[in-house]
Length: 394
Length: 224
Image (cartoon, rainbow over all chains, first blue to last red; front, side, top):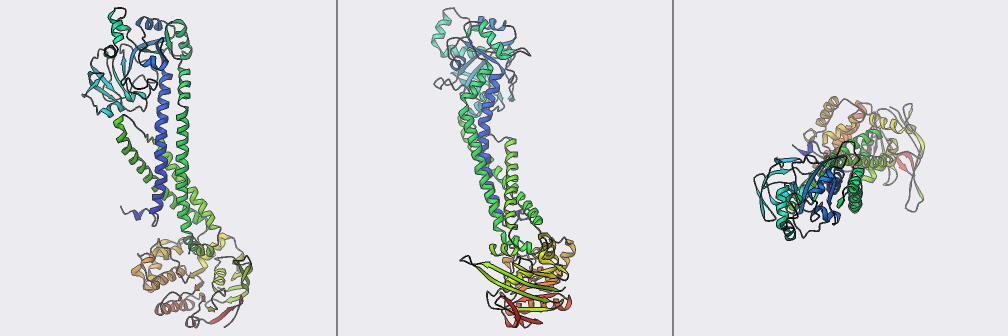
């Protein structure tokens, strides 16, 4: 297709100028979207279940490794009125040198007791992209999150080594853009083996016969009955069951939001920066393009064009050019984003999220701002007499 | 159409902030079918007078009448309509739009008065053929010679059959042969269409085409 057929002559650099502005807006917006989705995902997770860990350890550390939650305690929790299900879990950081505070960003092995349905109300079913999720009775198999799989190039049928033990991948998950993307899910029995292999002290305690395998839980996810207030139930568990740490979902959500306040501020800053940079670039380009044609407007008015006719004409052109520039800018940002993400995915990361709402917003932003800039410039020009416009544009 | 200008005045701001008076009460009457040439020294205000008569800029004082219509005091929208339907301009520097082909430039004058595009197209093609630029209709101004650009600009000026044609140094940027073509066309307009033509020029041979020759001096018109 000949671009001249649809792109007004002389507008190529205007389109490119707009494209650069929109690309900046979309790229920064996609980074903001990525961070936002991550924070929202973590919030949804903590609000979907009551997490319980063994006593004596900090919340983050206890939940991910070390705090033992014995089966007797799990039984006591299950008997608290309002509790619908208690799922024992073993959560092990894959790299023990990693700070255990950052449980949302580190790679984890999560052992699940699949005899109990997933109690988290917001993540009852994790989206499987290929293969299947874990089933009761599974041993020696793993289901891996999207980033976990991408960073190791795993697919269904691949073998993956976790803490020296080899597992067969039976399923990969769709991207959730939050913590599970970096998880390897295994049966709880396999996770207990990994834990024993990793912790010599635990082996000694276990060998002394004071513990059974069912006692090897780093925590439990607790679900509640319909209509139950989760925060109230969490407090009842805390008072009814001694020797456990219970998270209050509402409080944890608040803590999470407070601890991510910096990221939220960063997010706002990135978004504002994107709007300012993209907006200024776009409006400046469109305004300059209209002012460049001041002589043409003078000629057209000499030929009988009214202010309204000129405004309509300029708006139509500006919208066409802004849309073209917007589309090219979106394409440019997508290209850059995919190239960068293809590189950082090796570390199991993703920097950009090009959500449909972002792309629609960017195009709408380009159209509205392009139209406003063109209207502003045109209204400035039509205030001149045709002779003045011709003289100034000469 | 009878064109009358009464007491036209125009000043511009000078570099020192003092107004420079260019027109100091110009009176002019041009009958239908009359060819009037206006001469004068450079900077005497010839082009300014043409701009006022063509409603391209407002006068500081005075009135302009087309027949019984006082066009100088119409609304912006009404003046735009008058420019599109009653006035044709031929400029020294052609003033073609660089992003449009020669044909589109000619058709531009039909666009804003809502003429049927098909009839305008047929008329534009015939006009361009008569002026010898039909074969250049798909070319952009930068691809045309000065003479060709002036002929295209002339086609644009007369496409709507305006009763008043204002020509500002139309032969100033073209060679003698092209100048003769344009002058002959302007003269033919007065005969065939009874159009009034006001020509501003500094060339004696161009001024000689006029039924009347006026000189602009000290902001006023006088017989040359």
